[in-house]
Amino acid sequence: MNPFQHGVVVSGEDFCPRPELLRELQGHIDARQNCVIRGGRRMGKTSAVLEAIHSRRKAGCIFINCWGKTSPVALAESIAESFLAYQSRRGLSLKRVLEGFAHMRPNATIDPQTGQPSFSIDLAGRRDFNPKSLERVLGPIGDEGKNHPLVVVFDEFQALMDMEQHESVIATLRGAIQLQPQVTYFYLGSVRNLMDAVFNDPRQPFFKSAASVSIGPIDRSSFSIYLIKKFRQSRRQPSSSAMNLIFEMAHDTTGDVQQLCSALWNCTEAGQKIEEADVYAALARIHQSENESNMRIIDILTPGQVKVLVGLAKAGGAHPTSKAFLEASGVAQPSSVTKAIARLESEGLIFHDSKEYQFFSPFFRTWLLSMGPAA
Ligand SMILES: Nc1ncnc2c1ncn2[C@@H]1O[C@H](COP(=O)(O)OP(=O)(O)O)[C@@H](O)[C@H]1O
Ligand SMILES: [Mg+2]
Image 1 (spheres, rainbow, N blue to C red):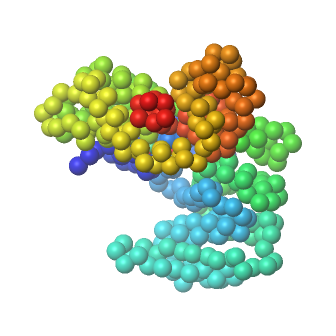
Image 2: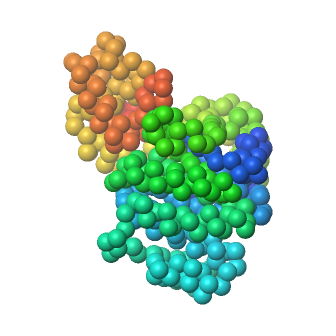
Image 3: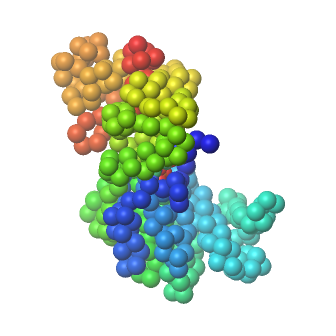
């Protein structure tokens, strides 16, 4: 079986040890210190945070994914459902769990395979619901935190900025959390400027309310040891130049390194030595498998926007309004570039990392150059 996991949260055997980072996170859990945890997409934020919490056996975890929660009601449902699931994991009987939130009329479904219950709450019909009502959902978490160490994880926290009435939602969250020093709150986010708008702006309620942890790449030497061991267990021998090429091509992004290793594993056989040429073949395989979905992305863009996208792939994103960039992309006006970039950014295809514009995935960039419109 392919030993490389990507696109999912990893734990246990699939988690390459990151002792320094885990120590830092564990220290914050022990001190009940709220934290904002920033890092690029697929760097390993969610996995590291959950690994740190699970290593603290006594600490309970309430996990809320803010992605796609477009209304305060959807957020409240999600918080309440996670809390019910937590209580059930702690061994509270189904009856007790449901009674605690009876006013929200929760439903429980038992998974026939695992026997584990999952919970759903539907508040959509509640006319009396407003952002302030979130206090009622957070209250029981505070009470629970008085009895047990508890970490509440808001994953993809920046997504709340897109929510209707987000200002009162954020103010309500902040107000309720402030009254719960016994509970540890972790706010995870990947879009840096949106996270900064919440935590680094003096006008915002969350300003300076949490310690800051930043999650970058796993250092190459420890990640190599971990990956090479996985290759060797299935009798494949990567050369050190092949390993270096993997890190280069994946821009050291944890999940992208794993995706490339997974493709590499698929196109090699037991007993084989892995060289740079095999890494190029694996990259070509990724381009092939993502070709259709990438073409669909191109289809939604105007020809001018595609030109700018190709220009960024060819010339890099440090100076997109420079003369050299205009020449490379074949666009006449800097203002057209600026407009195109705004669209590409809003579609999530590129982002600005304080130095330059980068692609959401390094393999999308190389696809543009090798198979896409730039080929
Ligand atoms: N410690 C780790 N060891 C090995 N692979 C990891 C590790 N952390 C993350 N990954 C890889 O990165 C991918 C994305 O991890 P995830 O935790 O979801 O990142 P994020 O939350 O930053 O987007 C995983 O599917 C896995 O391939
Ligand atoms: Mg994540």
